Length: 585
Image 1 (spheres, rainbow, N blue to C red):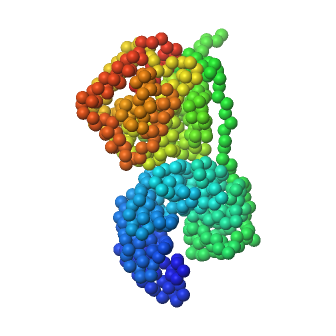
Image 2 (cartoon, one colour):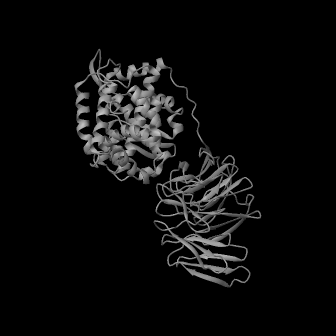
Image 3 (tube, rainbow, N blue to C red):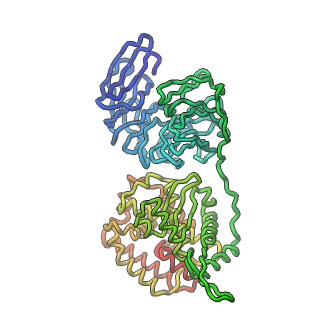
């Protein structure tokens, strides 16, 4: 709507300009395909997107076409105009920033999946929800991802921003309030069904509809329910507030207008669930080393059976060292990152093997791939991402598995678009390289803290054979889609040797022969920042050198690894059960 016209888009592909005063049609533009979201007017132009993948700008007075720009797929979400830029999402998974006058693409930023709603602009950021269960905050000038929040379901409504907070709903049934600057959660309010409505904030109150047939009014600061009003069907459309009146529509074919104060038939409810904050003090180096001595002194699997003897003979009992594994991991994670895994957003769950298989049967249809894995990431729950770990593996290997899957969780939270990797692709291998880097970083941080050497290794025939086989297989991994793990291990070395952003790490590797825990974390973070569209070229740039150059790199890598072997080390079972420690920079 403008000062003089009402603008209407239709599913038959037309946009109409209607005189506000008379109701007479001023003009009609035929885009040729469905228009799902209402047009946006600014600076004398009318902007809209169509299912044909085009974004259009029309003259407001005449309806004449000024420009049109093709995206990679249908445009279901409407455009948002801010100053001289139009921001619009496409079903091709990108958000586009277009010059408002010419349509020239200023930047495009990739999401994991696509979005169907108008972005919201505030604080120098573009906030947009997606079908991938995330709310994204993109830099308004560059499109760079500043932060994202992983909700438990699709984010289909446009967020509202007010007083330093961003408010939005999700199909998981929650309304979320996040810090608008960094994405940290302030509160979460649970409705009784999906929240697909776009909220609005007025006078310190968040108004939002839900598929539980209610309009909810929440205190913007605390997330407490002030009141809710019952319609006769889902409330999914956007809410509007004007002159003290709240307007909303429902699938019961009714438009409601309520006072912005509590209506006479309001329903009170419980307060919102506050965001948790862990209070954690790490073990001392001596205490953590004692835990390691116990863990590696068991020489058994995390979950298993043991034979015990007493006066009546011998018997078998079940035993679990899962708490010890999780405690060691938690301490290492805190030392490495400064946060607990709960704060980071994931929870390790270690199952006895029978329960692990039963879980896969119940939750994943008996997937043979998952049953063969030592663990996997991630499953979204109300409390965070579950890392599912199989317990019939040595304690040291289980520690490594938890750390590896935490590396995947870190990627899933920090850069969701990377999760679109095609199995066997370079992006798939890049994800594994990131997980390996985090796994090694955590092990080395524990080593640095307790005085245990985790960068040198005992002389052992099995370890030598493993390295020799790796050397023979690594070249084939570059073209074999089934060898993403070997390719990932090679990527770690080649990134340090050839990525210009990692020149400081290269100097450390050349001088010391290995990287510290913090340097391995920096390597993880560097790979984490790579956009999916850049991954193929990035990995090809590392591995696509001439055969002679790659041979030189391999000679350096194997020579460096060889220099670490033959030392006296404590807890050799830890190093031998985690051979990737050997094959990392």
